[in-house]
Image 1: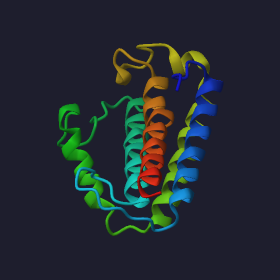
Image 2 (image 1 turned 120 degrees about the vertical axis):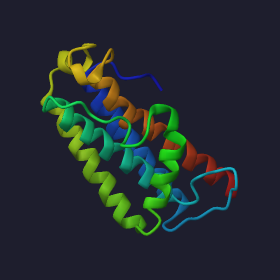
Image 3 (image 1 turned 60 degrees about the vertical axis):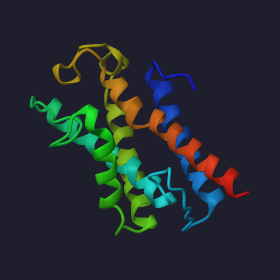
Length: 166
């Protein structure tokens, strides 16, 4: 997958990526579960919940950053080096959530991120260091990571799971 570098590419890659996740989930079937001791995720709910929570965090970073506050990244009590522990916490957080609830939640966070993309010009999205809170990168890079890149990871994970059980 080529990393989006324009607003239009980002919109298309985000929408196509989400559709690939939905397609992968549909191929496995609602409520699909698997037992793989080497994998953190054991269901579609786990994969979609992971996506949803990272998008929720991204939306929080955006809201804080655009309001002039320094976002806590990736999450309170964590650094980028502790993302495996953060991901494990996310997994636990979603264990009492239904697959339908996480799917609806992901659709909602996707729509909010799509609205952010639409509200910015291409320069605002892809000019590095434009916003102090994004550091040396661009807003678009953060959005790509939270949408199309993360969707590609999830779709691949679901596709591999389908092949493994076929």
